[in-house]
Each structure stands twice: as structure tokens, then as C-alpha cells.
Length: 401
Image (cartoon, rainbow, N blue to C red):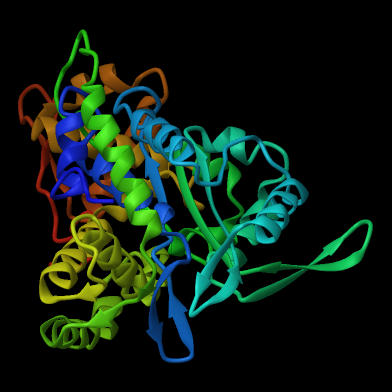
């Protein structure tokens, strides 16, 4: 079966051109679909481990403003149409394990003439609050553990004592808000084992305004679906092209310094895993246009740029999380100052009076000023204050510039 398009991701972007969702949301949803279609049938040997193209991706943005649900809904639809295993309900730990157990008994592919059982599946939800509605702590622990591949994974059941999953390969695509993360995820999950496994993506603008979206080109959708079927038929081991391997090794040696240069400690866990996420991303990039399972300089270079872009903006996705109760309000005021550059205090008070008192706004501005992001000037005669945005020395990802 031949491919219908030269590059799956390029065709996807043509298909969704008349949508408002940010392009990077669509791009990563596309990469997720490619990895979910490849399942556990392609892999990269990595010492004692094996890397598969399963991705954990999370869109974090304010509700309604940035159309983050559309790429998630698309991924659910096309993967379902491609007959890939998708779990999108409000689950319990037990229901997910039962779902994966059934898959491990029915999903099989042949490798060197021998059947290989696996439970490759995608967990998809455009509202993480719904997905984690029943028992967030238990599901966080489960997803954290099942992110890594296991040939055999034991779990306890209420009826049989202990059972096993065979060949897990789990991907997750979620959408949520910064406030939900702050209020509902266990503190240890932020920056720790859970969020560090995710590609965390935020947004501050829509791609464009589309008041009346046109009907999409269903012939393009048919091509996308056909090519996902094609990708799902590929199997085998990825190999390194010399240029790709050299680029990876050179970049890998920079990662310890990157941790030192990143002030936001919540991102250190992501950096510790960024090499594996990069390799998963590179595999998906290659699969988007080629049947040859090769990691070349082109894929590795593009994947490095992608995961480092995620790092540079991940702090924004976690902006509401922290022990400081005024942290979220401070983040909002900083966004306002960044937008206006220079604004009278009284106007800033008018914008924020519903959530912030004058005393609280004074404290917030004092904190922002102490960080070097703004300065406050007072008119000698009128005593009216003006707040001026300076920007400061820290980038969005908390990385020293």
C-alpha cells in the first residue's frame, strides 16, 4: 500500500488550515497520532532499554480562548477510524488495566515469524478534569509507571491476586488549564515523575480568526487516514545514520549544563528525560514521510529544536502551580505588563479589581519589581504611579539568557 501524501504532517496542516488552534498544538497532535499508529511495532535499541514512539502530550491553556480541544478531538477521531485502541472515558485505575489486559490478549504482530503480544493504546481527553475525575492520584501513579515500556508488567486484581500486562506501549494526549493543574494534581506530580514525561505546550494566541469555519476537505482526511494505516503496518528496528548519531551525541553532552542554566526546578525532570523524548519525536518525524527506519541528521536536528522549544515555554504551562497563593495573580499581571509595556497604576487596578485589592496589587507589583521585571515611577506633583515593564533577565522557560 503506497502513501497518499509525501509528508503526513504537511498534509495535516493543509487539512486544518482554516482552524483557530495554534499550529504547534496541531503539530504535536499529529506527532502523537503517528506514534500511536506505529505502536510497539517499531523501536530504537538503547542500551538495556528500548525506545518506542509513544508520546505523552498535554496542551495547557485558558478555557475556550485558544481552541485547544480541536486537535485532541481530531486525534481521537482519526485514531479510532484507523482502528487503533483509544480510551477516552472517565476511567478508574481498574478500568484502564482491564482495557489494557484485553488488548494484550488480542493484539499481536509477527516478528521473525513469531507472534508478539502487546497492549498499545492511546489515552485521550480534551478535558483532563473529566479524565481524572474519579481518582487522580491513582491514575497519576499508573500513567507514570506505564509510560516506560515493559515486556511484562504485574498488577494486582481484586479477583485473581496478581496479573500481567504484556508489551505495553501507552500514549497520552490531554488538554487542561493551568488552574486545574495547580488545584488538582498532587504536588509531587508537578516537575516530578508525571509532568516530566509530558511535552507541555502552552499558548498565548490563536493561529488566526475563523468566524465561520468551512467544511474540511474530506479527501485530505481520507489520505491522512490511509497513511496512518500504512504507518501502522511498518515494523522493525530504527538504525542510526552517522550524521544523526553524531549530532545526538554532541547535543546530549550539553544537557547537564542545561539543567544548571534552568532556574525553574520544575523543569529539571523534563530535561533529565528530554533525550528520550527527543528520540521518540525524531522517530515520529521520520515516519511522517518515510518507510525507512533511519534516524538521520534531519530528523534529529528538527526533534532537538522541537523539544528545546517546549522547554523554553513549559514554565508558562505550569504558571498557576506553586505554594505562593498570589502566584497566579502575579503571572496575570506580568502578562498584562508585558502587553502594555507602560500603564498607570490606576488603570492596572481597573483591570484587576475583581480579583485583587489595592493592597494585594501593591504587593504583587513589589514582587515583580524585586525580580527586576518592572519599575514603578511616581509623578512628583500628582503622586500618580506608572508601572513600566522591563522584561528582566529570565526567559519564559526560566532559562538564564
